[in-house]
Image 1 (cartoon, rainbow, N blue to C red):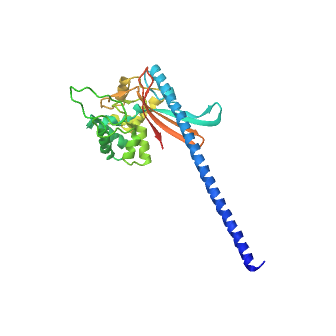
Image 2: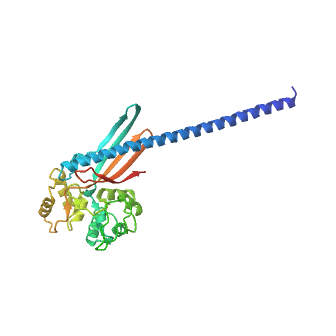
Image 3: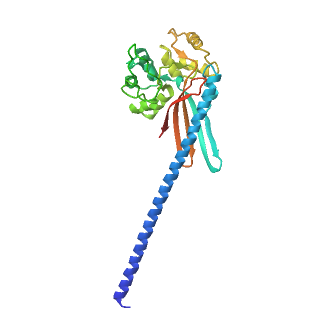
Length: 316
């Protein structure tokens, strides 16, 4: 075999190797794309199934709250509704895969309702002072008060004429005549204000946004909220009061709260408060295969009927 033939044969071998490498690369790429596509489909199916199971978890919260409303005249932090469900396995017949559910319910009336800051879009000075005291207790900027009031006032419709029928309340979305939709919870307000995570956590712990004005339930309120409600009350005094409460000396009614407040030596009149609640936030998380779905749902309890769900929000 001459040199030219050897070179041609060598070039043919190299070309064949290059073609094999290209085909192998294309095959690998197609296989990876198919695998990624299959995994995306599997992940989405898992997310759909996790959402369905999470909806069942929200129904659990509704049943617990319905039972609470029928049995209990007051709302306290030691009752069954306040007991969280942690890492509960969910098994389905014919499916070897196991989902894990965790959930809990919060009393939203145990927080300061930012909707109180305005009435028919008109800021309320007395409630503004409550908010400013609460922000000071939380060591948050006082300038947030004006911004929050503007957000809440814009979401309220103006007062209707005296001869006009009253508009229905308690619905999510933009109320007729309002300039903006009512935020679904303090997380949306915190996002509008670009608050950092520590500030957001403080708002979640002490404040809420409900579609109607509500009094604070002093049986579940944190000490900062109670101190903010009572002019001249220190945080240490509020902590002493809530500490006694949480050791089992719950407030039986609003008169009981007023009497104990007077016993602390505070001269300010007792604010308008409550000892039962009609608004709750159900929170649940389902982990199923590679999917993890979390959801919040705002519920209004109207015994003896089952609670209504006003809105749900899937968390990112």
